[in-house]
Length: 149
Ligand code: RTP
Ligand code: MG
Image 1: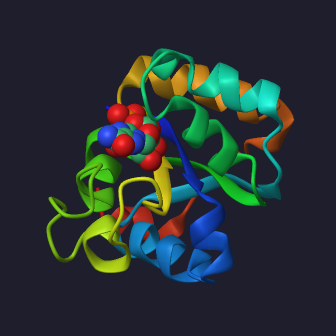
Image 2 (image 1 turned 180 degrees about the vertical axis):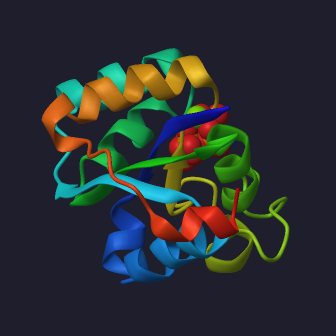
């Protein structure tokens, strides 16, 4: 089933100038970019986004990190998009992430792991509505889809 997910290049990925490479990875897979913006995450938004982690030892550091500089927020669409993007992103800790995945290729340390991806359909719906207004998500035909689906 075609659905949407929320992906976000974290401040480390923006600073390291790999937004373009990250977008390319999802584009070449056949997924469709339907929303995107460079933005700052307020503490309030960070706390709402990461509320499942409140109280964990890494929580304060995570909030501090995600609010420390601009992020690149995106909505991507496609068949099984949540599972596929999580696979392309790789394991949470870069030491366990396979080569060929974003975290496997670009980083060393769990607190600076480049990109966020929604972990379920429910999280995707929640996170998209947290970061994007409805009019910031575009519906459009991608002519190449006839060669993908
Ligand atoms: P994300 O939400 O950022 O896409 O990452 P994830 O699903 O792969 O991992 P999650 O468990 O949701 O953790 C959120 C972020 O918190 C940091 N973290 N640090 N043991 C640690 O020090 C630790 N565990 C998690 C990571 O930056 C992770 O991406
Ligand atoms: Mg997560």
